[in-house]
Amino acid sequence: MSGNSRFPREMAEVRRLAGLAPRADLAPRYADSALNMALGDLLYSFSNVFFFGFTQISAERPAAAPDHLFPAIGWRLLAARFSARRAQRQVAALLAARTPYFLLPLQMEHDFQIVS
Image (cartoon, rainbow, N blue to C red; front, side, top):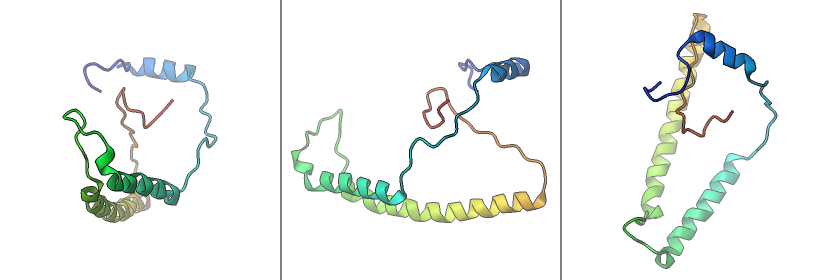
């Protein structure tokens, strides 16, 4: 937590607030496939490449040429595959060792990845 966080510092207060929280509704709200997301991204990116000259470029909004980004994105996806495999091996080793561990999700106050 940063010094500006409004998150309670006392565990008793955290537990009290947790008791007031409604039960989480874990029903799926959105489903999509990686293929659909990739196709949408490709359509968007290729339209940027082909219609690049029709967009207004300014100092506040510099141009990001997608043709330069594609190789970097491909490299990142390839590296992510190896990182995921390494992470899976580490989790499997942790579970096989049967030692206690803590899972601590981190989220900043302005982060939208975890929504309550």
